[in-house]
Amino acid sequence: MDLYFGRIRTINITKNLVFIGIMQPYQSGYKQLMVKKDDKLIGFINDIHVNDIIYFTADTILNNRGQELFYLKNIEKIIPCLLDDKQKRIANMSMDKRHFVNALNGKEEIKVWNIKNEIFSFLRNYFTHLQYKEVVGELLEEVRTTSLISPFTVSSKCRDQNYYLRVTLENALKQTTALTLDSTFALQSVFYDKLGKKQESPQTQTLEFVSLNFDDDRMIQFLIDYFEQVLFLAQKFNLEIPAYEKITVLQYSEALKYIPDFGKHHLKHTKLNDNLIVLNVPVESPYILEKDGKKVELQWYIHGHYVAHSYFDEVDYQKIANAIKNQAACQDLMDYNQMLYFNLGLPLTYSGGLGIERSLMYLLGLHHMISIQNPIGVDSLEKEYVRKLRRKKK
Image (cartoon, rainbow, N blue to C red):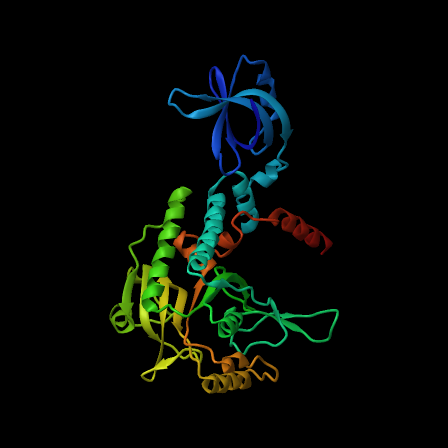
């Protein structure tokens, strides 16, 4: 007879028995805890509620279907859930507070959290297996990039100079690859100082890589593997998601026949781009290698939304230096990262980026970025309390 614990999900009272649905640590999952109505322990039923955590001793038995369940021997400890009746009414709650309460009640948010967690493990294992080196880039940069995306400015009490939150991991990856001649990858957050729609966020978690051996075909295979892993995990955790066809791959010239306005900033949602990879999309980026007078990249779309891209890297430092100078002039930047590591003789490389949270949001059928960034609403109750105090002070 062992000591167990779990969170109460359901209490079901029948004619002769009481069945308590218990959520235990992940490896055990959900189990039924049974007690007879004429048992001397039955009095504890008045002391427990859904979402309480209980510690108990029990024997493991089989029901008439051969499934394992617990037969209660004793309740050792009850840790009550502190949500009151008002907090349980979630209709008018903020989104992250609603996620918190739904997760407490064992709803879809926990499944989403598990899927996101396992996707990060999958991606890390995927590139580690390919012998790529993981890079942890600087979060704060003393000198900002000339990216047209505006960074957050961070002040310091210790010095007059401001810092900038990174808007890309590309610099750290390319520097490391230039010095070590190893393919590299990073799974971290980048930050954007912009006011977007509800689906957007100032902070997103991304995968970026710089490869010595990838090409478009290898990238397509990676995206297929990633897509199939998401479908597998949704099935594993019993999460209902939209139905998807296999990834369609088209040349840009072919895609234009079906989607005349093709372009990531104004693309209409059609059945075709529910799950679409487009090759050789014309782009203007100075960091993409020019071939036959053209700069092109691969792009992946889910529900008409751009979620990933990849391309061969430009390695001519003079071309890059001129582009950086022009970008800096457009933004009146006096001090900026001139990316001198390109002068180290960067080998021909293939780079890619995947918006992990963005792609998961669309693949799992969610509608707000917070639903994938913070699926169980961590600290949301505390934030709600702080907001109420602020309102009272006003």
